[in-house]
Image (cartoon, rainbow, N blue to C red; front, side, top):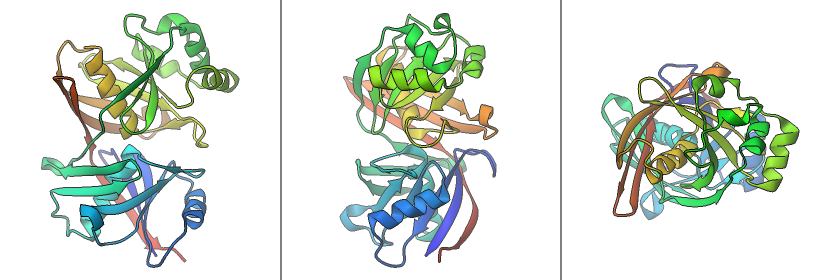
Length: 286
């Protein structure tokens, strides 16, 4: 079966978040898909199950090396990129992926930026314990802002969002494994997203993974959708319509750029996360 390697949320090849996309030429079981994802050992691997569009979209499944996930941001955009190249002749303006979390539309705009819409957010646990959060991240409690909360948020895949005071604090973050596990056990079994506004009014992000075999993600579309909902809910920028750029992954040597448009109108959230993708290789899986 054909497979492709894609760099997602990248401004050039060899940046962004890597993704393997497979197009099976036969029936394939969940167990085999998981084995392939383990073999690839990227944070996620996706499978386009058919070149047909039942129910108005392409059926797609996404796996980490350990589990199947209902939704993830960079696999959604990277898979749509391959669908556009392979099945749509590079001309599609809108592609719908039928994922475990439901149908996710992906649109193509000027400059080749693909943008996905995310689900209405859920807001969960608030954690008012800066020391426990800081210990999990190997920073100081006073690096964490207290004028905005630390909170669990999901727009399809959950994140625990932590506002930091400075870029320096972002750069000093490093997972303390015993304290991270204690934080998971006590509070939130999900990804930890730390963020800070930069001098240009854009956002710097790092995302530390939960139970995927990877310590950090270079570009996380789903988590940045969660963050957009959080920024709107707490009026972080003082307005209900946002358009900003996210920088992520530089600490890992995989600089990534994400573009976020978000709006809150009468209690309804509209959240779009986008970026560009590059196909870096293709081959045949034996």
